[in-house]
Image 1: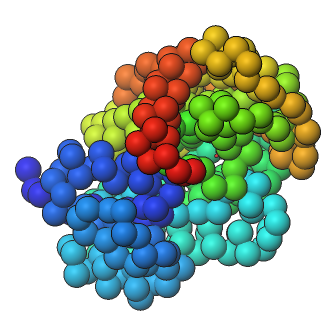
Image 2: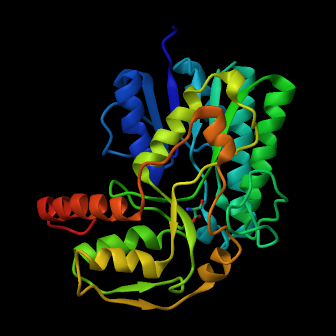
Length: 320
Ligand code: SER
């Protein structure tokens, strides 16, 4: 087996931080090139400052390190994206085009492109949303992901570039903070609970969304990338399910550990976004093609999040 050389864009982000460590563990620290827009001192191993909208800069890194796989995580998320729609489109699409083109030209073997539940709109069945359905996203972020899925499929069909993708639910983890998403409340709420502070939720109590624990999200990412090519029947992006719940249910589960935990509701523009997204996901194809199976339900997530955050706040004794 040839030694993989793996580039990660957006390595400083919520998923990137954790995925970088996992890939270092899997492939060896010297074979992982973490990159992000901003310098990052918290990584051990190789790190490059990279603006992925810069084709030449990306190409130089791919050539210098003889990159064989790219995990392209850099993107502007749903809520932040609505504040600057055209800029979000430019950045999300430009970085993807650069990754696809550089990969085609330099024969990168595999590319990972993260898509999202944001590709769906309120025109589809919102419970057990099927894999193949009409995509009418309500946000620029969702539009960029829906377009990106089709570009991934195009590069596969036209050039044979092995691009793989999953539609992430909201990702919850203790290791890193999300930035600018509609599902971010489900991470923030644990931080507040552990710090004994009240939490004001920007979604209403009954707004149910698909969610996934970081461990499951990272495992899904590695599993889809390692699956035999001939098993991959979806070349746009796979639906994957973790669990699903609303703010009231997550509060109830936290109160089993922190009975005094106070939550109030003050829905803002993110409520409108959430109301166009699925409440749960049908991931039959991912189960069939690469044996996808989540391991964390809400109660497992709550127990694990609180255990780790308690430790973190005790050790650091500072705000994250
Ligand atoms: N978690 C993302 C967001 O809320 C969805 O992909 O934007």
